[in-house]
Image 1 (cartoon, rainbow, N blue to C red):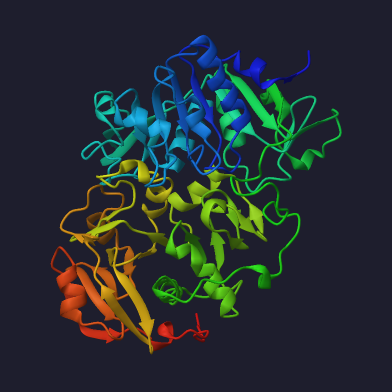
Image 2 (image 1 turned 90 degrees about the vertical axis):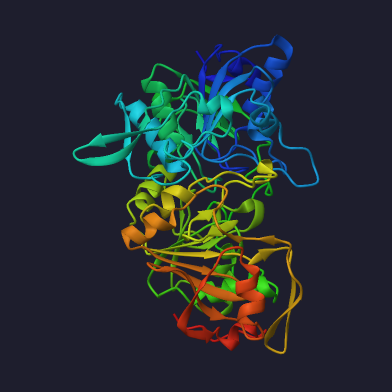
Amino acid sequence: MSKVKSAQEAVGLVREGAMVAVNASSGLLCPDAVLKALGERFEREGAPKGLTTIHPIAAGDMFGSPGVDHIAFPGMISRIIGGSYPSGPSNAEPPRIWQRILANDLAAYNLPSGVVFDMLREGAAQRPGVLTKVGMDTFVDPELEGGAMNAVARDAPIVRRVAFEGEDWLYFPALRPDVAIIRATTADENGNLTFENEGATLGAMEMALAAHNCGGLVIAQVKRVAAQGTLKPHDVRVPGILVDVIVEAPDQLQTTATVYDPAISGEIFRPLSSFQMAAFNPGKVIARRVAQELKSGWAVNIGFGISANVPRILIEEGLHGAVTWVIEQGPVGGVPLLDFKFGCASNAEAFVASPHQFSYFQAGGFDCSLLSFLEIDAEGSVNVSRLAATPHRTAGAGGFVDITARARKIVFSGNFNAGAKMRIEDGRLVIDREGKVAKIVPKVDQVSFSGRRAVAQGQEVSYVTERCVLRLLPEGLTVTEIAPGIDLQRDVLDQAATPLRVAEDLREMDPALFAEDPMGLRL
């Protein structure tokens, strides 16, 4: 019997109350054709109801790839476990899944992306669950929020603190999916999958293995179907013995923002001159100052936000290749891309499966991480995962908690406060109007990163803004550098909503950061 079916036939096999795992990262590898068909079935039939859906990294980003919103109808999902979630623009109504979460229509959890992959791995091996330190002293810890995003989830906790061999650990139970929905470029008639046009594989193999070993169904959306025996075995990333159904979707996008770019999938290398450099503004100053924290030969993780421009700073300074970039979706090396192509890299050296990349991060196997912040508090804790007033504008923590758990060095970056109007004039930072929202606060709204735990573990942590640099020291959050043109009291200490320490050797930030020409960066 042929494994090739229409999307409608494939989703007809999904049972009421099933646990459905989806392999995607925003618009990257999102199996939208299958998710759309599943939502359309529910609209026609009112079935399947009561699904549990699992998204290690968000499916859909609301800017071209609806992802989970295809199936976010009242009654269709009863529980959702996600590393991150689609985020909507401020001038539009919340994504459909956020409407369900905020209305308490379903139990919603935000768990570290790498840990969710680990939970699937444990399910695949028929083991009980995951013991880990990842998430301790953060919102994932049951002593804080247990990863619960709403009241319904708080009434049905997932994670527990347990004692094992004299230590406290977080315990996450194994996930045993009934259905895995994954995506590739090509399937042969036997279901062997290759990813030659994709920017990553994410956790396709791990997710398929979990569903298959738990007696479940594996649906693979692909761009094309090839004759059996025509795919090179070294190119096959998911074997056909794990795949039950193939859905051909010839119009699937490579990413939300890309029909097809062979540099994303490593089929060609772009000239470095083709990458657009950041405009000269206070944001570029921040990225330049972050770059000064790096050392040649390092492996460096970067996150979404200002720090994503640091690779372009190195290109501009003639230092491309001096460090190797590693991102959670799996690319190693090359030039990480921006905006809604984030998660992809052009000119990558390798594509690693996300679960393996997260194991690398969770154990602190890399040298440095460059990440953003929404808020910093008096203990140096950071919130990246929730804006209290408009939670749907944030995506949750994603891999942030996995990455920061044991990272040896972390550089957070962002504007000192929200809404300030600034410019650079004659090598000095000029603040024309101060922001109205403080980002350095007595206590963050949600602890995505624990400053107290970082100090106890001896992690090196700094925070780079346009007007100053702060470091997390055992004695507290300390201003160590200020920008030229900035008054320490008026522009820094008075603009923070919590007291800051000032280093005895306070110095001025490098003047070269504030000049438009390349700064002669040395690592």
